[in-house]
Length: 449
Image 1 (cartoon, rainbow, N blue to C red):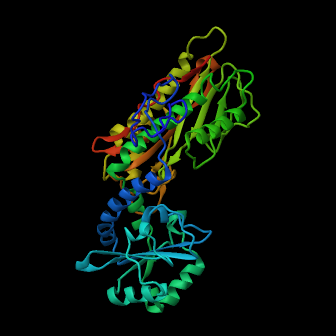
Image 2: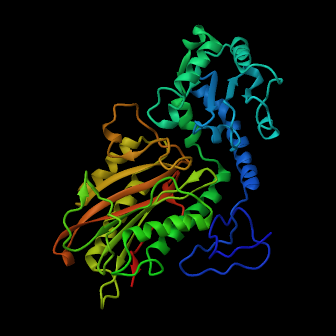
Image 3: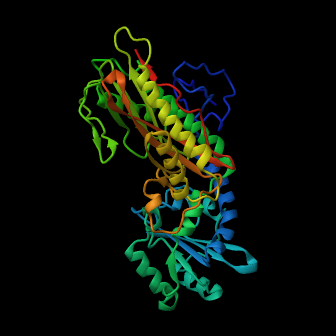
């Protein structure tokens, strides 16, 4: 097995130990001994996770009153759930159907109607005899078990919970009949619990993915990439895209950058600092912010960090900017350590956090969201919308991953009282003592000389 240095592929050290020469790290790169998983090993790794996830599904279905759950993947129109309920493979059938049935004392019955069955699929699902029509098999399952509720990807508020197409819905009605259609329900609550439940085996690979994210952002916000007076915002964004390619990972959103500068006009839009134009040239004295995420193994990170470009003669960040960062850390502590506990509603957590900020006189905004299976995952968001929603309270689930995304705005004396936003975003996981970071938070601005 060829061994790559971290300088070449700084990723996912826990997945494969490098058995030959030791890895040599450079100061601005992740300290992981690393290989990217070849596709065959990734499929095997995620297959193990799928087996564990399927083992949890029957209890979830019963909690949500679901007797049958049907997920349909269409050619050229993949369902975003497919890689989470079935092996993460390319599915090219005209209509591939995955069915989960609460079979009572028989347990969970899993059937794949995929045209032709491969061994990779039959490890996890039963497959009907060749030549049988999927409509016939579905009708037989419904007639035998008569599920009280048939859950489908309809009626949800997020794309992954409303992914069933109109034509596939009509196909199901034709296969099962109007009496079954009367029992069609939204699978959204079941999908949310299924995707928001993290597995022990995902933890170490995800932590390494966070380490990689941190490594790439540190490099982007350093003199390796930024030459004051020359480098543009677009240059940094393009470097991040190329770094993703080198690391053999992808991203789920465009890397964004924000620039704050003494004397710059108020750059806020709808309460947030606006993304900088690509043509902006980074100058000495600028405060830089990067929003960036990495996707691999079906998991996604979300990450925001900030850097300061030293002026001539400066050796450190102005004290006013340090106090601004300290305010954001106070906001993190209030939300993560004091307000959050498993079983508490996200609205109560938000209200308690903002009450503490008001008492301390800190102008704050919280817009944290679930993370893991998607970058903007399903689950209980802790944000300014949570307290005003009319839906039932969303309870925090122990073990869930969260993008702790928030900011404070502080007047900075050295900038003639200009209001400066310090934005941070860190992946964290929920314990009985509150949220914990996968890697330590940013305690000081990165410095660009």
